[in-house]
Image 1 (tube, rainbow, N blue to C red):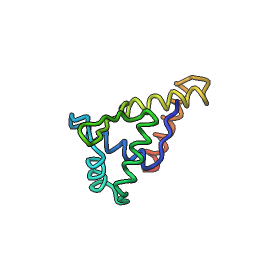
Image 2 (image 1 turned 120 degrees about the vertical axis):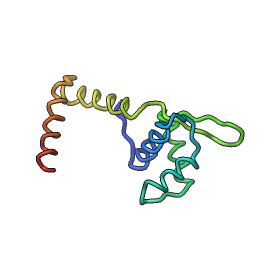
Image 3 (image 1 turned 120 degrees about the horizontal axis):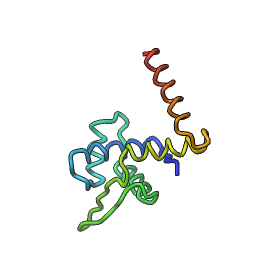
Length: 117
C-alpha cells in the first residue's frame, strides 16, 4: 500500500525516527511536541500532535501502548522501509512492476537536480 501522509504526519514520523535513532523506541506525545518545537517553525498545539499520532496509530503506522496514565508511541516501519514500499508500489502502478524503469527516472531526476544546483 502506497504510504500517503500529510505534511504534519510526515513531520511527526521524521521527529520519531530522529528520536529513535538515539536507541530509545518509546516516546510520548510530549517528547514529540517538544522536539517539534525545536525543529519546526510552524508550532502546532499539543492536542493536534496527539490527534495526529493517534491517527497514525489507527493507520498502523505507529504502535501505541499505555504505561500508567501515559501513552507511548514508536514507529512500525523505518523511513527506508516506507520509501521502499512506496517506490515498489509506484513501479507496480506506473512502470509495469519494472523497478529498473523507476530507477532510470530517479537517476534522471538526480542528474537534473545536480545540474540545476
